[in-house]
Structure formats: structure tokens, C-alpha cells
Length: 438
Image (cartoon, rainbow, N blue to C red; front, top):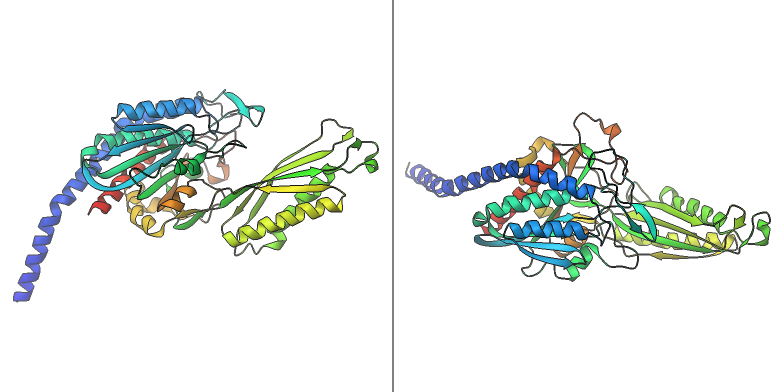
């Protein structure tokens, strides 16, 4: 009987001690939800403004100025010019605790927009020496607006934050122009994760793969590593009427393209190791009746395993050089280092999924198969534990068969995804800081 009395007394004491902290946590969560609603009109306006004024990688001058001005208006410490156009905001909470970084990418793509939206982009820019249309065809405009909204929400409750939040507005996620540095790797090199040192980093991406109101993530390998490859083929120029008088680099290039497809279809066990080798560019010639001297191919490699990645690189080298030689041509291959696998830290993923469930509902959290897209957020994850997740941007009345992929000129998002994204980033930050300060 005495043991039972002591046990009951201990439980009462424990509940009494915990109750105030639980009440404070619930109050803060309610405040965050209210702040998300209050800032939503601004988030939508920011997103539309950024969408109408897109900027290519390492050229995000207007976007970064907009971000920096907003962060300063919130009393957040701001550093600009990081990795050319990146912006870092530092929000110090009112209580001691860990440091979490929240990241948004800012760059657009060389795509002519065809959505017909009232705020559609008509901007043009220069990409690799060409005049191109510029569009936020990958949703980075929403990422920036969401993080600007989260910064406002978190700044309003800074006195209650047990730790520090770093806001990383990153340029050049789509890749710096050839011959330039940029992106997450350059931000890291310039100290983005230091002073104070970041303990964890979180990022998101919007897509039409799922509907508004759902989020998806998986522990460990989420997205593939990616490398760009460039092939230069040299032949011998001749009249198109006398092809036997020269060496045709176009024919050699066509056979190289076909040969590269056998890597995934015939040379790798894709039941164990997903592999993609895609040629996205094939350039040659200036006139219909001239066999040119040179041709150029460019493409992308996607893998999930470092050993398989090395095998794929070796096979590309062999196919390119030996197929070209079989036609009397010569060819060289350049494969850039690319980005590593987007790898969600298992412990951090387990810790943070409760915050996502609080925003989206546990029934609306999806674990997708590995994704062959790539993200240079992976560079941050190589340095500190990281968590990357997707949010649905497809209208609920649009079936998945009609989903528009990222990088399409018709890509758009349902803006109902924006407040959920703001809420998710805010709650993820707060829940991490609270857990780390206990």
C-alpha cells in the first residue's frame, strides 16, 4: 500500500512539474498558427512578385535585395553577398539553445513561361551566351516567400525561442553558370554554417507530385546524386553530298547517344541500383549540306550509390571514346563533380516528423520511393544533420495523371500550399530548438 502511495505521489509531482512547460509549448504553437494566418497575404504577394521577376543562377540581385530588406525590417541580423548573391539572416532567441538553419533557394530557370497566369514572367536573360526566357519553373519563388514568411513568424516570438535560427537564402541551386562557382557548396565555403555553428539544417521543395495538404519525406537517401557530363566529338568537315570524304561527328554522336542508353538498360542491375543517364543537348553544324567538323553532347547522370556512380562514369568514358573511334572520330568526356545524394539524417528525421504531423496531419505524411531528381541541399547535409522534405502544390481537384512536372513551361502551384509551408518551417524550427534545449 505504501509503495502504491509513493508511486501516485511521484506521478502527481512529475505531472505538476511538466504541466507549465506543456502549457507554454501549446501557447507558443497557437501563437505560431495565428501568425502564419496573419502573414499569408504578404507571402502570396511576395511569391507573385518574385515569380513575375525571376532571375537566373548567380544573378538573383533583385530577389536578394527584397529578402535582405525584409529581414532587416524584422530586426534580424543580415549578411549579404554570400556566394555572390546569397543572404543569411540570424535570429537570436531570448533563451539559450542550439542553432538550426532553414534554407530556401532563389534562382529561376532558362524557360519561357506558358502558364498564362496574370503574374507570369515575361523576363528574358542570358544563359550560356543565348537570349532566353526566364521562369520560376521549379517553384523556388514559393520557397523564398515561404521562408520570408517563416522569418516574420519566428521573429514575432523570438523571446520564446530557446536558441538561434539561421535563414539561408541560397543562389544557384540549379547550378552556377559554366565557369563560375556558386550554390550551397560556395555558401558553405564562405562560412554559412559557422558563427554560430549550425547544429541542423532543414529545407523543403514544392511540386505537383502531390496535392496541397500533403507532405512527403523519407529517411536516408531521398534524392539522387547528379553530375553533368559534356562530350566533344571531332570529325572532318566535308560537303554533305560527299560524306565519305570526311568523318561525320553527328553520326558518331548519334551512336554515342544510343550506346549511353545501354548503361541503364543492359549494364547495371537497376533492380538494386536505380541509374539514369540522359542526354539533354546535342549540338552540331551550321548548314544543311555541310558535314561539320565537331559535335557536342551534354547530359546528366543520376545514381544513389558511390560505387555505382564510379562504374557509370567509367562506362560513359569507354562508350564515348570507343564508339567515336569506331567511326574514325575522336571524342573527349568531361564529368563534373556534381552534387551528392540528398541524405536525410535518420535521427533528425525521426525527431522532426512530429512537427510535420502537427501541421499536415499524420495521415497526410507520405514516404515516397527514392527520387531521381537532385538537390544541392545535399552539400549542407554533408556538413551537419539535415532534413529535406516535399510539400504538395497540386490543386486537390487535379488528378495525378495531369500533374505538371517541375521545369515545365506550364508549371504552376496552388497557393494554398504557401501557409502550410510557412507553418511547417516555423514549427520544425521551434520543435528542434525546444528539444535541444531540454
